[in-house]
Amino acid sequence: MLYGIVIIILGLLAIPSLVLAKKPNAKELFDKVAPYMGWIGVVALIWGIWTLYRVIRSLSLLSGGTWGIITWVIFLAISIVEIGLGFIMGYNLVAKHAISKSPEAQAKGQEMLAKVAPYQGKLGIAAIITGIIYIVLHFI
Image (cartoon, rainbow, N blue to C red):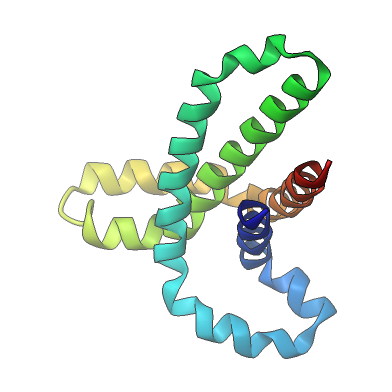
């Protein structure tokens, strides 16, 4: 259940404008979290890669009937959301520390970010939805 809550929080952090439109007093919270967004993104990216690895290793769930298929698809969606949001949120930190010395790597990273960044809002909403589904399935 905690994992679902973490995914929901990741989704909320990815769509601050939508959250602030509904709850303007959340700006203080976003301001406090902003310095850590890069690290949150890097952790989400690494965790998403690990989750994708586990999803691939658990292909046998697809032969487990309806619940197995639903579980597998939810974890696949969660891993995609984690990787996408992790990359978007953690890119500046990675660019600053890991690829700052290589202009080619910076150009490639900027190109990838330009392709993925427009989907940040959709990935944030998908994170919230998959987190809620994960929590609901946890209780079933």
